Each structure stands twice: as structure tokens, then as C-alpha cells.
Image 1 (tube, rainbow, N blue to C red):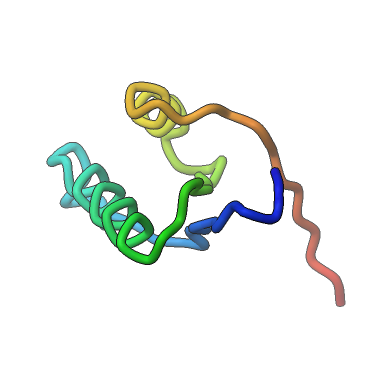
Image 2: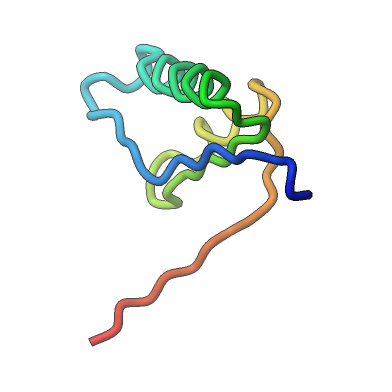
Length: 78
């Protein structure tokens, strides 16, 4: 990436179980992309939580032209 890129970064959003499979996630993602374009972003990053149906999420992201580039790890500290 270079300094001329403006990034749109999604942190977290969720679709309730009763709305999954009804294209609500796709609509949210499209709206996010629309807002990012409006704000001048030329690259967007989205993430998915591993414990949620990743096969469906991965499939949707790939169909929309996203590339899987990273994986995060987390650990609670006390």
C-alpha cells in the first residue's frame, strides 16, 4: 500500500440468526462499500469471526471479489 490509498475498515457488525440467509449481510456489506466509495476510499478491509459460519462468509467475500489476506488471534489477559 502507498500513502495515496484511503482505507475503509469494518470493525464489527453482526446479523441476528433469524435474518441470516436472507441477504441482509450482503446488503450491509454493499452499503458499507457505498459509504466508503463516497468518502473516497479505494480499498476496504472486512473481517469475519471464526466461530460464525465461516464457509458461507468466505464464499460471499470471494464471490464479491475480496481476497483473504490475514488472520487474527486473540487472547484474554487478566
